[in-house]
Length: 467
Ligand code: GDG
Image (cartoon, rainbow, N blue to C red; front, side, top):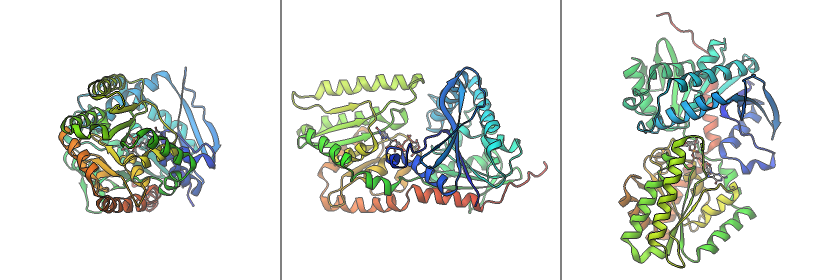
């Protein structure tokens, strides 16, 4: 059987066999795939060094072999903080107002992709399957081909693919998209992002996409499809039954003193719609003064990407906004928003989800959103909570029984909170049953199987036709 080589910006293997529960579902799922295929996981160590050496640090952890490299400070600034997180991340989340176009970022991005290719290529055997992840590494497949690799190489995009009319605002957009044609399989989270990609291929590259997802462009054929990522359902449903989760659940319930918890869990990121969510919650407090002290919002928002200025700004903005709402509405014995800027171990998080009768997950744009699925998985089947979900999260295409809202509308958020509070148990159970079916069936293992089988079935690299 072929080995599987996973390449992503960061590498996050389970620390030990038994510590897998502390990791995100993606790490657990990829680790399982790597064990199955006895493969390798390659990426940046997260460390900065003075001068790039290409030295590979090989480790064996939790049954998985990882290979990491350190990057130079300039690489991290231009590639990671720059092109990936100040250009592509905002643009792909429809925020061209925040996207920064700087040639230095572009050349740093290219340089790091070349460095990754130089370093990883010698580790790849001819019949290995190669699976590249996410927006940091779009041109990596092309760089690997330039180094002679004929392997089957696939790419999965974890974030949305933007509409063509936005994407064309990126200088050299065509070059970036064309570099994707070096892959054999390209996966998106949803049909919606796939649709935008198809549109770009047809309008900007003069290509054709068949009904079965075969892209024909510039003499290349590539298979494209939607592979919606899921959570590690088995792992998560176990996590919620652990003593740690139960204690966390009791701790939160105890502190709630019969008030109902509305929970939000998000990386501190503008795409998650936190300010808009706070405004919607504020609208609810204004419109329903009689229900004010019956609930509170627990927003867990661990900081991310602290070196990017926009993230500092959003943090300040949210500190100010939550402070203002709390100042305006708090009573001596009640605070409307508990806004927590720290992360919690996974099992505790599972317990918090279980303690919350309502989840408010309202990203402005999200490739998928795993928190929504984790919330559903953590519920008590006899007395499940209500999921309020943004229609702009990829997860909305699967979790159709959630209370769907437009996250830009404070009134819709307010109305949904009101409806969730009043929802009869039978309706909660009916909606939850609809959602858990997808969360359980379309889990991360199914996602991985679907993608890897598509890659296995792809024809090995097709020669480029002469112009
Ligand atoms: C990208 C795409 C796509 C959060 N706070 C804590 C914590 N988390 C965990 C959650 C969840 C994960 O982080 C977040 O996943 P999301 O899917 O919600 O969002 P992104 O980080 O933006 O992920 C997204 C995903 O990739 C996968 O393809 O769904 O659309 O943007 O698992 O639980 N985990 C712990 N403590 C925390 O405080 N332990």
